[in-house]
Image 1 (tube, rainbow, N blue to C red):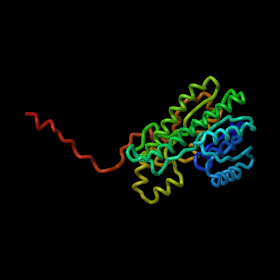
Image 2 (cartoon, rainbow, N blue to C red):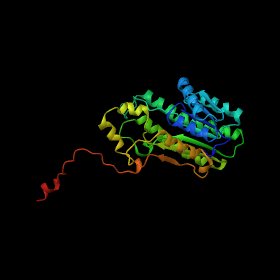
Image 3 (cartoon, helix red, strand yellow):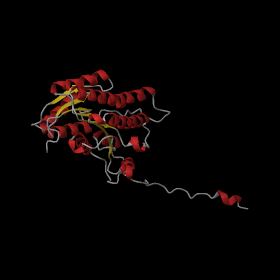
Image 4 (tube, rainbow, N blue to C red):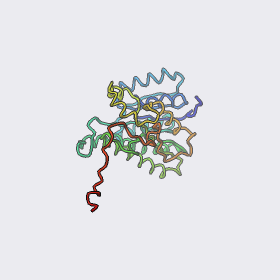
Length: 280
């Protein structure tokens, strides 16, 4: 590794697994001090141990329990880095997609509110307090990355309205903040992942080949993405390698959103030319 984040302080929310954990490992290998934030103390402890095992020469790798839907919790996490010299990189990655999330008719209001509180307000709180930290420490540059999703760009055939709406809000919020804070040197970018190969997804798909094919067919690569492939994109956005990248919806999807795919299925019936019945 090249030390692209040497001497920088980063916060990763949703750090106990998936993209958050893989990003923490890469950040640590590149020299960053990382505060790992998550809501599960047990999962966070296991994740911290894994990072220290894989990167024994890492700098500070600390943890904090944080419910991102609570501003006081996010504020406390960010301000705890004042002792390190303040935040340089903020990765607002924590989010949920609830099993009861559905369409406009069937999504319960409490699930809508829960999803927006975590996926939208949680990102807003992270952005807000990252900016305050950067200003407090008189920093002339900083990178804030927010996890959105490809469904904010193309929509989802599987009903998940609250989640999709929340990720669209993340894109809009990130773009506006990128413009508002550009002259301060603070960059804001969104990560838009495709569906990933996670244990949760694989358990859900199981041995159902038809269910698996219905999703894999949309990938030109013929496979799901991996969390590490998203983490590599986050590392780029966090580092000075992306110093002129701002307000970007960084899509990491193996080409899925650029593909015109017609899933296999029965042939459509031939159209009926009704005009011919009235031609005389």
